[in-house]
Length: 435
Image (cartoon, rainbow, N blue to C red):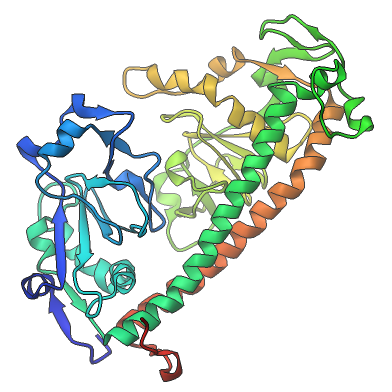
């Protein structure tokens, strides 16, 4: 450590009553398969942690019988969650307002017991820092099994702890950056929700057609309503607007099938094009950079929709730039060239794609033949173009917010190790005792 902050072993902090570190139940106390339910107490696994947050809404849940048997790993607001088995090193901060949850055997909660000695937000950022992550990297390779840092070994880890006022100042700086990123995430979720609602109204519920029939009152311009008919006809997909067609998905969309380059062409140094293999590389709207490729075989162009064709089949993202796609992905574009219509129409097809996850002896997949057999709606090009004019500004805002968030995240990730190590000290004018 560059700084002169005192360094404490976790076991010592526990003995002093400053910190509690505990994982989920193993063995007989662990929830059984038949005790998982649609409603109940959230059961947090490593997969339920993303970008510093706990994904409570999508987490599995256990019933009251299982919860009553739990002996440890019961979470609390303000905990910091660490993944320590299989996927080692994910860190997430639990908000002060959260539902009941328990940790799985592959996650551990770290709980500040004395907030005047150890600030919970400083603890979170310290655990995200390279200083702490390097300790995990050393410990996770001490066994022959997959990455694993046992609860015993976690208690041998160390924390460098500055005075509480400096902890709070460091956390406040990093928090302000994370708060802006979170605000952008919330804004993007709202913008995408609006765009999805417009797509559903026009292309699933056919609200403009119903408005022309006098069944609904929509606040759409007469020119826009005039693009839609006032009658339905029967089709293979059920009633559809008169004049619209039903066709094969392969005829409605241009598709580039992915092909993985030789393994020797991958690198983490940024040489070549970004390479994405499957939905594991996906984030909100755009994939995260993982590796690059110097010998790409199949390319996706900027604004192409990226479709996962290996389990899980049907996950969707969009290409932010020219990139290389592997066997687990296709690049999709509607015949009209529309960016937004392609994305939301492909998202809508997820209900058809999901059935392919259950097929196959090893894993689900979507083939070119299967895609040809999927029937889709083919609306008039004028309506697709009108949808693009309505929704493209929303997607532009989403893209701008994501790019801004990535810039802020780069700044945060640059500051974090310098602040946590003491290499960069917080100015005295920013260090104030907080209530």
